[in-house]
Amino acid sequence: MCTALSAAALCSIIWLLLVVGACSFFIWFMTDRVMYLTSHPKAVDVEVIYTDSVLFPAVTICNQNLFRFGCYTLHGGCEVQRI
Image (cartoon, rainbow, N blue to C red; front, top):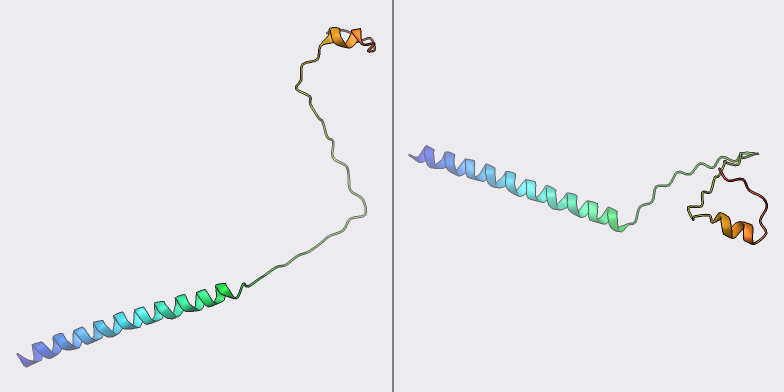
């Protein structure tokens, strides 16, 4: 009977050590990460490439307003053929 109690006690001590160790590791890890975060680390890698000439892109602006043909011809607009 003495061996059964000592085995249970040994098992409890091992579990206690494992739980305390895991909690200690968690606290250490979280403290390390919080300290790293509060140090405001910066990692920037910038590469600038200059070119001698840049091609201008083709730009099309489409006006969605309705065009009144009658108003245009009344105010002296050029002759436009209706389609």
